[in-house]
Image 1: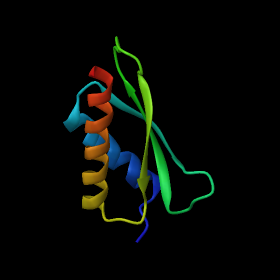
Image 2: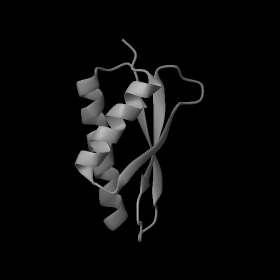
Image 3: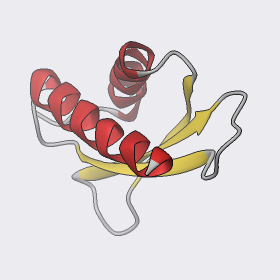
Image 4: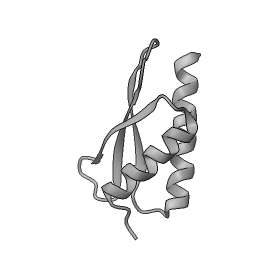
Length: 84
């Protein structure tokens, strides 16, 4: 099963809101040259510390549960890098 871009946007938005209420999904697109992965563009609302926007890559060839776990882990890493 391949997750659609619509599925990924919904999943990413849900994960982002649970991780950090100021995160917003700006868009989801297929990764160039790959039909099995995508990139999710996130923004931090009312951002005071760069980067305020960042991209997270994710596989589309996983279950929704696996996708949620992968996105959650990557968002945790990205947000930790912003404050270190």
